[in-house]
Length: 390
Image 1 (tube, rainbow, N blue to C red):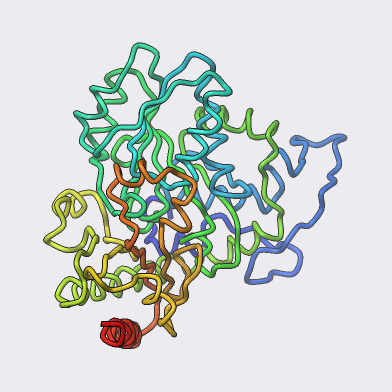
Image 2 (spheres, rainbow, N blue to C red):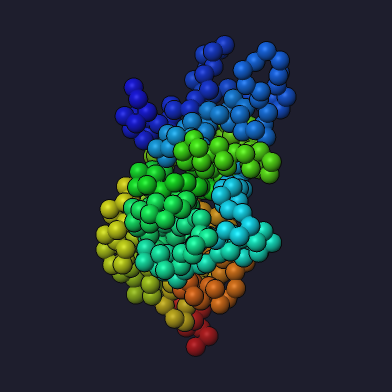
């Protein structure tokens, strides 16, 4: 059966397996070698060349998940992002990016691009017209992230892809928040799709990795730089990631369902000032998200009512873990100001609408009643502290 005819859970489970021809095991064998023969063979294998048996198999799975011709797996999400950007940009080139990006990406641009002589423009908002106004004669790349981190804004994939093709530009997207289960940007014409595989693809808060999916031509260009920069992944982690992706579909669909319930609950809560979740009909981009996503995702952000201490609220949670990452099977919460966006300036955060009291919640696979109870108890504790002080 052709890959494009398989269901998402079947792709997650079976595509890109390493066949165990010797012992007929049910899972991919792990090849730990870093040294391979080079005489009288068709392909010279070398871990830094992304072509060990486990690396190649996982890349096939990732490509199938993103409806791409090819893929590469990296040692981190930032390794995937930085290598992809630098593969298509050189001195004198210009890139247009939305300003609502992962803080590490923004920091990389701000700190490193000037050294390379690469020009860049961050635009406020996510409308296609804003991107077009920022284009310059030397623009080579348009870079987006949707849903965005941490405010869950939505960018129109089809219109961005058309704009890029109109001006002969390369379009890139960080698809981490959506995952391949909820969104496949290549189907809408986007050229290059990137992931922090640490997040949903890994899904258990125990793997550090990155991924890129695109056409064979674009992947080859990224590979040519990637083999020199050396951001490849150890085969043991590759094997763990392949195992984790087998449950990606069922994990993400459960997280979608749970997050929507939690977002609705928070949106009606008297102690919550604002909820950011594209699956709420009150979200300004709800209809757009509905048109290009298969599910609204497991990520949401919210702000407490004025007078309630967000940090104390985090500390009062018992089930939801306060940690610096997202997308694991366990629900986690964090302050973007103190973690993901700590490296960008207060002024930049203000321009993006990231308030000091904003909290980003990654909803896990627990029973939602337990998550709600944890939030309720934490809110009651914070309110009781306010009453004592007053």
